[in-house]
Each structure stands twice: as C-alpha cells, then as structure tokens.
Length: 114
Image (tube, rainbow, N blue to C red; front, side, top):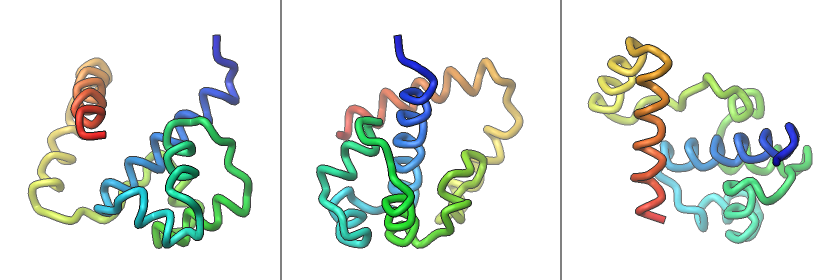
C-alpha cells in the first residue's frame, strides 16, 4: 500500500504530464527547456522521482509558468482553442461521479498514445 507521500508524488507527476500536454510539448522538448534528461521527465511524470525545489524551479521555467501555477491542481493553462474551452465549460457543470468516470476514460486514452 502506498503511503501519502508516494501518492502525492504520483499526483504531481500526472500534473506535470497534464500541463506538458496542454502546452503541446513532448517530454524531450520539456527536458531540453528544463535542462534535464527526458528519462528524468518520464520518471517525474510517472511518480517515480521525488522532485527537489531546484527541479521544481527548472520544470516551471521549462513550462513557462510560475511554480505556484505548477503545483496548483486547480490551475489550467490558458486554453489553446475554442474547442478546449467548450469542453472545460461542459466539464465544470458535471458532478463528481461523472467527472471521475470521464477522468478514467481520458487516462485510458492517454496511455494508448504513450
């Protein structure tokens, strides 16, 4: 069974991946921008690496955002298309149970592309 710290590491990793994808960056491009290896980015996104403060700074710079935005799970990057904004608007009206189902479906779709 995972402890709380391990769970937070996985959650943060998913957050990094989500923001990276929203900004249309590959792991390699983010690694280059962050002065890190692509394997380090992969390990962070999969919750395998604990992130130090200096790594957090590098990731935020690579994603061109403030650290506070990166760690705030409610912060969404600026919408890049009207279609995406429409989807977010629809999702904001759903209850928790439906959002969890949609999240599971999205996670399954995203793992197909990795």
